[in-house]
Image 1 (cartoon, helix red, strand yellow):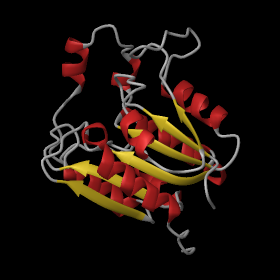
Image 2 (cartoon, rainbow, N blue to C red):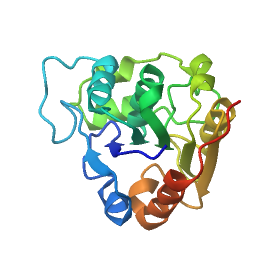
Image 3 (cartoon, helix red, strand yellow):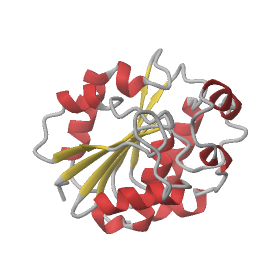
Length: 207
């Protein structure tokens, strides 16, 4: 099934412009929607948004038909949770440099939480305290998944992408040489081409 809407989800800095370069190069008839997170980046805080579950609810509310979720870093965790909540609405997932909600201790990832807390003190701190492990649920996601990783990313090293690929039944991993955590922004043309191919690929067979 082809998506009728593409939802672009940013990371913890809430940059609504993060996916714009790739989205502008992406030729696809679906409606494109760039989401922001209340209290993150340019999006004003909302007293009704106090946790990851509230962000997931925001995304689910946007899923009014077949959707592709295209997400980076923290947005990838939100995307995974939204896909688990409403798998019938998610035709494709694109996940860039994210933990995917897994416990990534032991995979060589840099501890980013204190850095973010120190460098961006205005950000809500509840997302720093989310340690839920979604690993046992990942095999339930049967839609095709494109994983985008940079081999120079200390926050989410390639080992994290490889682990995520092992748990998602229909995932493919693309690694960018020399790219870091912002690869989807810095390598927009290549990323847009990969997303276009991903969205037009035949649906995986069951099983």
